[in-house]
Length: 416
Image 1: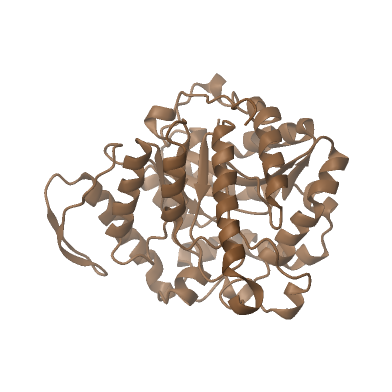
Image 2 (image 1 turned 90 degrees about the vertical axis):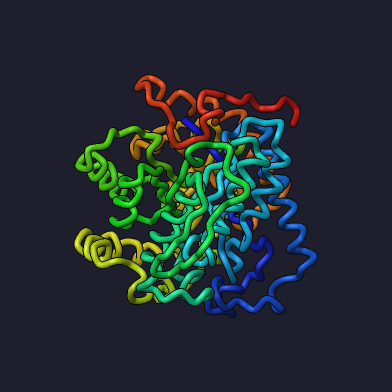
């Protein structure tokens, strides 16, 4: 199994009464009341240090993503972070997983193709090209994309990027949303015909179909743990089977919050306040921000309503503020505890969901830098080795990982 560290880069020091004083962590939190640019610069550098440390400790990839106007995770330019990480890890066998640049909000989308090609060249062919649709908060409210156009723009941008990477000749693109007379990318990716593409999603039927049609890796991103994800992933694998594709576990990815300490009791002492900070403050978002009319296509909307999944997620969000640390751990929103506890639960979760590309969120909410380093270190040395062989007995190849890294098991750096 391939395991990568995911990092949101949140604001780590929101006030205790943040959720009482402010309506949302996303779109409209006032910068001048809550943040200081010099302190934020420290957050960015800590984030880069933490991801670089994870790479040195043997994780298979480091992941960043794109969001705007929020304190939940503010990397508006993920490729700036990716460039720093690509250069810092050039002596390591670690994938640069861009989860990633949002396609509909980048105009023209060949900017994504160009920057991803740069990252693949800088890293020596270690890029994973994430292609997210974008949240309604980012795309619709902040960047002004009309919700009903968002998926159409996404599909067109995707097709343009892949053609731009592969075409041997300059070409004109006359799409509905993009008209470009001369497309002739410099540079091109090292990986041919193009880097592996990961498509993040939250359970939409259309995203399953899109991933399957183009043979991309579908990555379910959720903060509600493997138990809640089971319905979504069972549906995805049924769809894959019906579509006539092999149920290669590396066709899927999953994001899980993880916190490791010496014992279960010590884990609660170390991490409880930071877990509660994440769920109470970083997910303090009004429900109506999530679903503007037109953002979700009709088939996915209908499927979510009929299955009850949409209502279940809304109910879960409403209960978060009443949850204790034990509630988050017992429901496996966060897999936390001693190394033995974490590796047993995490291995079982990956097996139940049948995922071969696991992303672990090892920095959670307000965790300070030193505690994040401890979490990474304990995960890398005492949990990661027990996950490696999960799918080896089935003989699958990870076709959705940089080819030069697929068979490499990078050891943790002693004393890092």
